[in-house]
Length: 440
Ligand code: S3P
Image 1 (cartoon, rainbow, N blue to C red):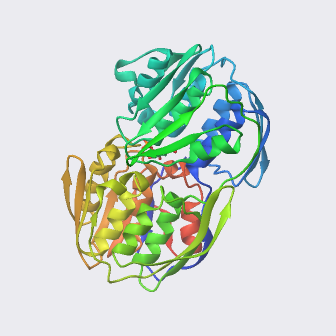
Image 2: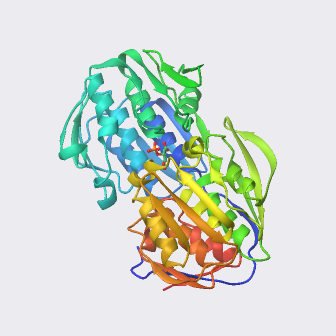
């Protein structure tokens, strides 16, 4: 991890074609399902970011053989179940990692102690522990189920669980625990969230029944499922592609293409919103890969973007993209209203507070609300010329570096090492496109 900060400097147009890094959500799931399955799972295009590497290490401690073969290719020899880890399982910065692994581990008669970095130890785990406890798992830990905590699994009952918040992590934890519960599980989802766990469970041979009852999704996993190792081709991450694409929209004269971006409609709310703002964003070469649609996305400089009201019901399909949307909104004309995004406050940081503080420090007019925020753009490049505190949040860091590429003066961020949790090649990719990002 570098001690120095990173600085982005406004400059000439960004031009070129790049490949999106592997999707983080799918990468975590490929490791966990590969470890739970019997036999060999091969993965290509894995995101080799710190979060996923922590999940790979965790899968080793639960008994799987996990080998890196080079060039994003990995091999997992699953044992058809988890064994008790001999040491504490450290999930680093990864909320997805720890929540899904706790769900998977709860199905087995074992005791496991989980921890993570400073940010992860401050994030709520009760959202996962509550349904797991209703299935029969027990845990011991700090107040409100913060890490570190020890989980004891095994002898789980089935459960029908209505999600109290739109969270794919909670849904996935219940489904993974349900693999080893008597009676199977059902998750009722008032707002649809990313469905990668459902899709991947099917690819590993499980039966997953999804029914829409009056706009509410019921996801059922009958008891007695067996997972068999398979091949997973990880598509490009739309949440990472967002950064070079928004940079292409706001840096004058730019044309940036990101290839191989996953187009699952439960993930592409940002692209829909940017187009509503008038962004020149074109999707081409749409194809299918490992059960997901992927395509190439080209962003051209779009000086006439207008502020919009983002429908709150779109939030689950772009929950990680609001910080970079707010950057695009800072270059648009008029108000961009982002509401119904209270979940942003319990991500790697309080992303409503940090996005508002960072943009304000860059001279942008932002209004914070309890469950949302409003950005008022003037159609002019914001002032920039400041150091933004990221509190160790990779997406806050990348969003403000993108802003600095098109602001009136450079923008610096602290803690650049955290970018490697999701996008290790970010700075090099932006330099390759013609951007100026250097140590500050
Ligand atoms: C994820 C779900 C989302 C998202 C996170 C990845 C996943 O979190 O913010 O980055 O892979 O399931 P929530 O489930 O908490 O909304």
